[in-house]
Length: 240
Image (tube, rainbow, N blue to C red):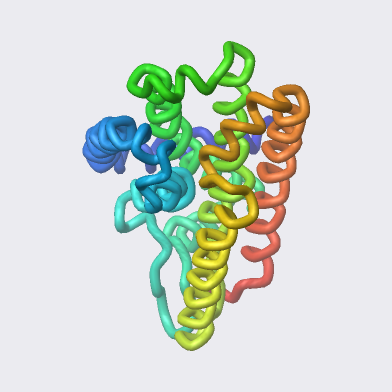
């Protein structure tokens, strides 16, 4: 509990320093939500193939971009890439657990409020979405997307620990990620017959209990795994 209390204090300092940036991004999120909702019916009709990618970016990439530039992962020295606070905090009498928890609190703050704006706007703005959901399926759908945000999106928080990478390794990793994303984007509609978001709507309606249980399991597993992964990376990385 002491680790969490210290982590909250550390996170509050960075959030306060990034407040102006966060307010600008909040306005951006609201604008994006309106754009999404105006195009959502077009997506459900199969005429907006890029909608899935835009939606996934909100959950996976935007939270990392919301932080001030001085808090984002960057090239530090030689082959070392990291977020500056990770290096700075290790010079203080603070445990690695506290450092990791503070980074996850910040990422959660940059993720959930803004993602929930989008998720809560969907039934308000789209007639097709309301017609496709049920009172039980909608909260399951929201829960599932928050779970996806944790299970996959929090990889961005863990990556702030950085590491000692050569430029070639970074470029290759980026290429592999692009290839994997392109493969999933192209193959998923062929295998499922619908886009990824539409598919999550369908499973929330057809199997709400199983989907809800799976979502909770993903939340717990993602929250624990990425914290453990980040702590492991901090231990093995040479920050000097």
